[in-house]
Length: 304
Image (cartoon, one colour):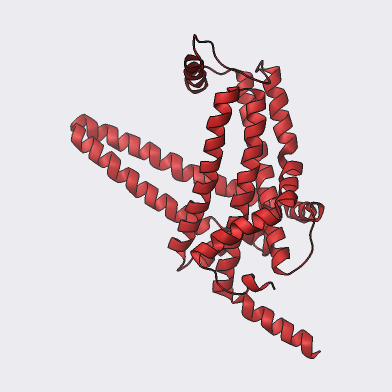
C-alpha cells in the first residue's frame, strides 16, 4: 500500500491528494470518461443539429450584444420546447444516469489500484467497471430515486402547508414555509450524506445497493464527510459555472457550446470522482483498519 493511503487523512490532505491524483492521472481519467460518455455527447450534438440549433453560435436577435445575450437567456429559461427537445433531454439524461456512474466507478478502481501500487490503463479500468454493470447501475438508479423523493416529497408538503398557512395569515404561511424548508434541507443533507458513499462500496465490496455500508462508514464521521463532499462539489460547480458564463457570452446556446460545456463537465467530474473515492478509502481506513490488515498480510508474505 502506498504510504499516503496507509493513515487517516486530514481535511486538507484529502483535498490536496484530490488535486494531485487528478493531475497525475488526468489523461487516463479523461480517456475513461470520453470513451464512456463521448458517444452520448455526440448523440446530443447530432440531435441538437437536427432540431435546428446552430453549430457555432446561437444567439437571439437584438440591437446590441447585451440585448442578444438577455434575449438568449430569456428564451432558454422561458421559451417553449418541442416534443423532440423533450425527448432528447430524456434520452440524454437517462444515458447519463447509466454511463456517468460507470465512469466514476472506473476512477474509483484506479485509486484502489494506485493504493495497491498496481498498474492500470483506461481499458483495464473500463473493463473491470463494466463487470459490475448491473450492481452499479441499479444502485445508482435507486439512489437517484431516493434523492428525487427527498426533494419532491418535502417540496410538495412545504408548498401545501405554506399555502394553507398563507391563507390563514401571510406571516404564518411564510414562517411555516421557512421552518419546513430548513428542516427538509437538514434531513435531506443528512440522509444523502450517510447513503452517499454507496457507489465505492458497490464497486469494491460484495454489497449492493451499498446504502447500508455507506451508513456504516459515515457513522461518527458525518460532518467531516459532509464538509468534504460540499467543498469538492463547490469547487467543481464554480469551475463549471465560470466556463458556462464565458461560453454563453461567446457562443450562446449553440451546439459547440454544449460540446465544450460537456468537456468541462468531464473535467470537473474527474475531480469530483477522485475526491469522492478518496473520502471512501479514508473512511474505510478509519473504520476497518485497512492499514493494519495490510501490515499483517505483508508480514505473512515475508515470513513464508
